[in-house]
Image (cartoon, rainbow, N blue to C red; front, top):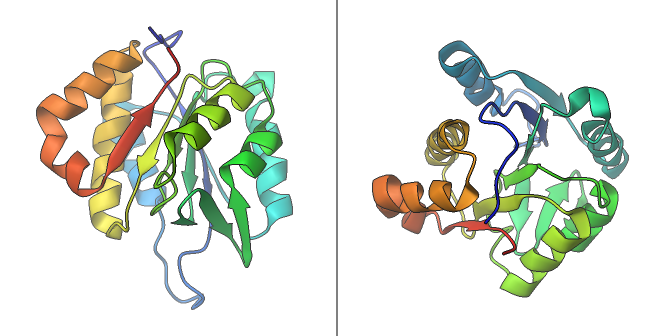
Length: 190
C-alpha cells in the first residue's frame, strides 16, 4: 500500500494559459484560495508559458524547503499522454524527465483534459521514473468549473487520509458519478 508521510499536504501549482485572449482570467488560483481559506492548505502558484518556465519550477518543487508541498498540481490544457505548454506539447515521459526520480511522497495531479487518456503502462512508467506516490487526473475533456470543483473535493480528500488506496475508495464511494463522467484516474504502484 502507498502511504503519504503526513495528512497535511500543501500544494505546488503550475498553471498554463487557458486562452490566447489575455483579457480572459480563468485560473485555478480561485481553487487554491478557497482551499487556503477553508482548509488552511498552503500553496505556491506560478504561471508557466514556456517549457523552460515549467522545467525551472518543477526543479524548484523538488527542493527540500518545499518538501511539505506534496501535491504537485499541473493545470494546463492537455491531450492524451501530453500537456500543452504555450505552443509545445510535452509527453508524460518528458515531464517525468523534468521531475527526475526525487518525487518521493509527492502526489502529482493533472488538472488537465485528456492527459491520462493513455495506456496504463505510460502512467506507470511516469510513476517509476519520478518515484511519485501517485498520479491522478482526467481522461477526457472537462468543463472548467466541474474540473475545479472535483479538484477541491480531491484535494480535501487527500488531506483526510494518508493511504492512497483509501482515497481512491472514498472517491468511488462519494463522488463516483462525477469521477466517472470526468474519467478520473488515480494510479499508484503496488
